[in-house]
Length: 187
Figure 1 (cartoon, rainbow, N blue to C red):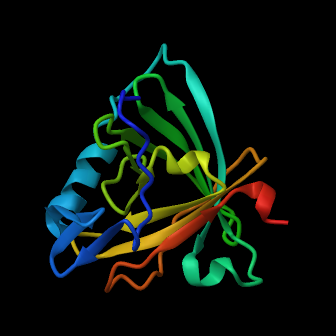
Figure 2: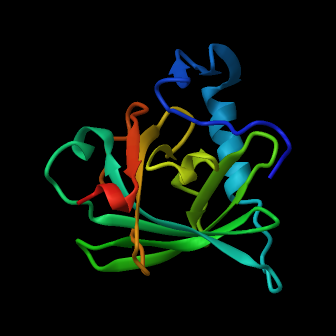
């Protein structure tokens, strides 16, 4: 993407909320509202059509809340992502518990290296992570419902073709961390 060093977004660790501010590596980078607005701008910046794009598969990710990631519950939400050279994200989210699938769309901001996406045709909720995170076995992600309503997610990659739906019944009161696990580590 850009020429700068890769940025790993570890929500709750190197990037965190304190009061109404968002910090990255100890430096305030935005208010909570600004940070959520930035995620929405990134996620909804994808062009309507990308006809001649060459797509690179990023993988299939199993999404779990951090508290459940170490437990025995198998993931039920899967996310399949592809990326164009222009930074456009496309894919599918699938909820295996409800057998519902939806297309997603989004972008990667080349300067911040934040990747954000939404269900196609919607503006919320917004899921985000760092593009570098998606190359790791475990990748924290954040699910935005508004300025102060962000829920962390964990991602995991698997060798799958289809993907799931975002949860509709999450506690939306405070930011929480989620984790994604690389599929090879799920077994």
